Image 1 (spheres, rainbow, N blue to C red):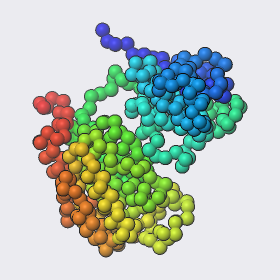
Image 2 (cartoon, rainbow, N blue to C red):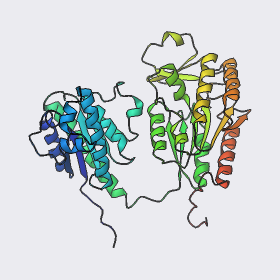
Image 3 (tube, rainbow, N blue to C red):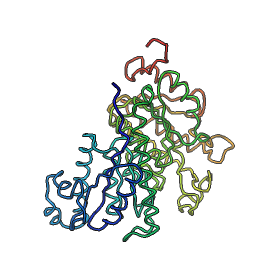
Length: 428
């Protein structure tokens, strides 16, 4: 007999019931009207909600072996909410592992958002996560705090009490999380089998375009290939998913977010870029794609440091400037240091003829002397633990793709990377 699939998703609703009771009860009604079941969790500290939550604040505190009285006496609201966040993470994990919830939604200002971001990161990829926040999309939220499949909506009109605008936002959010949970539940039994997943990074498909050849080549070998756009949050998602062991190997060929982070750009994926696959022992082939550039918002004035540098406006949102030879040497040393920390097999391909599309003669970001400085520093900095392959070619060339596949195929033969899924009707 086939296993019956649940059709009523159980949505965990998280908030401070002592101050947001009207909003949380409105959300409960919206979820139930949308065909879901609301499971209420209270993360209040000082007061009590005017309803009986399924998981009260005392249960949240017990999850980290403290009492609400101890949390109140902990010092200040930041310390108190940090303790509640720790308890909520532990309790939510247990509920998910026990199969008692299918998704979660939380509401809050900066304090509630801080707690909700921890909870979202604690749940695996594919569990719907929705945060209604007064600081959604703000630079107050660092990239490393954002789960790769997190959904957010700005809580317009949501500072204090229900109103027409607030209700519109909350109803959209509740409908979205219920709908997402229904689709996930329905798709679990019908999801087709796929081969091991290879993670790959790129910067668009014009600046870097190797994936146009690599992706179909890997798919023919029986692999599922996920390509991430490294404009800050794409690299963050790549790192987070690598940290959850979703990849059998990675082709991390667009490391430009490292340069962004070193330069202080808001187009950042966090301090741990190029670290998580290595930390998990996932085989990684890296290349310094586009590390000669810093991405910046087109709609802001250029920082004085870059005002005289070669400039390329990609669109009205994002523009690029090149970094000088000294900065490129620093980037090379940083890449080498990150690769040195890897616990699994690592390789670096260094294309000495250029590392992005506009880094060729006649293009606006062509600086051969600065590229030569980077190549020189990279040669000196690569640790002995990393396979080093310098090629006399551009990163967007067939030679680069051929070298990447050569390394990958050898690792498959050596058992470092698992074999792909054979096509139907073909023996393994």
